[in-house]
Image 1 (cartoon, one colour):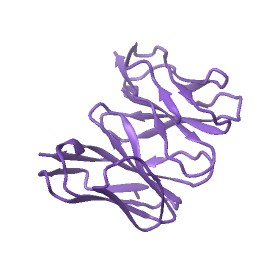
Image 2 (spheres, helix red, strand yellow):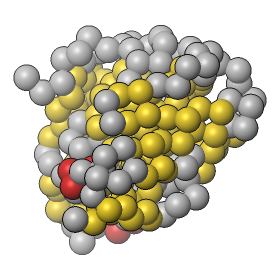
Image 3 (cartoon, chains in turn yellow, green):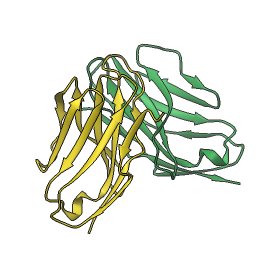
Image 4 (cartoon, chains in turn brown, blue):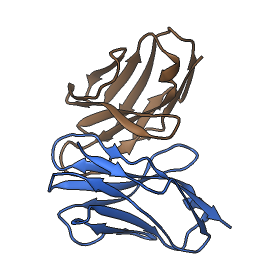
Length: 113
Length: 115
């Protein structure tokens, strides 16, 4: 079983559309995250959720909204997609305490045309 | 705010040789964790090694080891006996101790292995 799975792996869509990326973890971790990797490979955290509470909200446009129906799921919804949103989006999870390694999903490559 | 700096955008090494990737960080915290992640062309993020700041002993995982210099805020990764499968982007990352903060990443080093 995949520890952190996200779907879809690839997403091509037109500007102005609304799309969602789903993420699920079966590790029993308390916290889940969304990261964005830009075209220069730079990784930056967007959000994290701990027991359904948003605890980090970096300065991302409010067109991006994380939604967590339960501890094992953290979906990313994006409204009114723009060309600059094209990137690879990674979901990750970790235990809330200690420095346990973060487990990443395989990423979703979003291309906005 | 914490920052992580990787000063080598690209490194090249002959197969079977040793290579060291540099990483420095800036923090006012005393308790934190440091990580090296590998990202091959498949784009999967793979944890290579982690270090707890309160431990003086350098972490080692098979051919991978770190040189952790807390006072200098330096955390370099040494890869011994380089193999073709080591070719990837390598990211240094920082996490404050406690809480559920996300990782702060460096910009990465692209490692090329020459046969």
